[in-house]
Image (cartoon, rainbow, N blue to C red; front, side, top):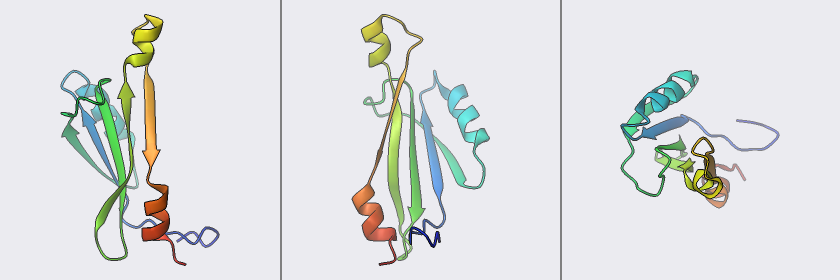
Length: 105
């Protein structure tokens, strides 16, 4: 637990999703992570049309594995700029959920 913040996120996990076209990138990302449990899965959700997605989670005090962060790559910036080398990665954090489930107070 971080005594300054009074939050603890035990048993942190990262799940890396990738399409078959981006599988090599997903593998590189997964292999670069340490200190957390990392799993890989195929990306089948069309919302992340950049071919990559991730979820970060932690175990609650009640033993449930809770996904807290979700993010992924999108191709719309490259389409707007007519430059396929440009990418956009967005993330979201369930901050209210984190405060409710993981706070000590």
